[in-house]
Length: 320
Image 1 (cartoon, rainbow, N blue to C red):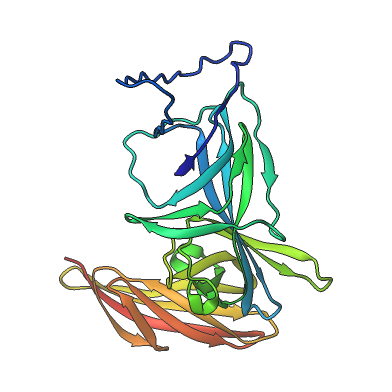
Image 2 (image 1 turned 60 degrees about the horizontal axis):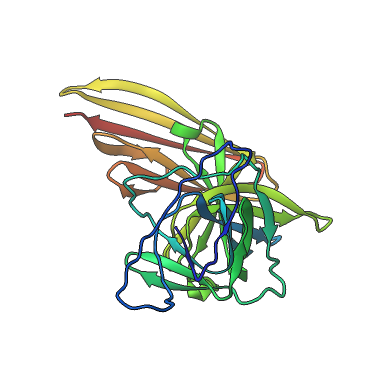
């Protein structure tokens, strides 16, 4: 939600009679004469904002420079010059969400406030069960304009790259996950509004290359960001049911084989996730596993460079 204070509205005329703009009229009564300042509060449509993040990882995939931006889109049919801007982040319940109002079908124009040498940015505070971000300077939001303003910039944030294989859902693909903890110790610690984070890395010529993107939810301080960047090119997996037999009392005994192939020139660690249902018991397993919850287990295995690793296990399941 976008909150604007101390605003002066600039009205735009109807465009060739194509639209009939809704009109809001106040009637104010007083027993005394004279000029008065009046503050009005109302909800308007056509004003939206979102957060965007850019993470640039180092050559060792161990640290990231992270920049956060807010993108504000004004399609309200009105310009707001020199407004005090406040942004509310959180899952706010609305009974009716009005459609954005756009005058004349005009395409929005985009502007950005550069990060280097920029004036003071946002401060953050709690508001009920949400978070409020206040821009520490006036800003002008023109009609049909998209404006980007820096939220924060932090360098050398510790990051950890994981490989994740979920054969039941991903087939042969092995996902690449970037893990970052949103803590003050890591240089972060600000509650992060939900948005899209894009990840880059410099190539051998020093040119930044796009690696992938993911959506993050509202993330409180000290919680983890788990960013799904994409699938590994040189690592593949396969999952096969090697045996199935029925048991009495609506049960079954199933055996599985999971093969991981690493074509990279370095060893890799892969987290293999398996989903189990009913009342289950693993009677035999070639590797140690961790029970994450009632329906999920993880194997964590090392696969040598240009090598293969196979996991086997037998599962007994009772269905009620």
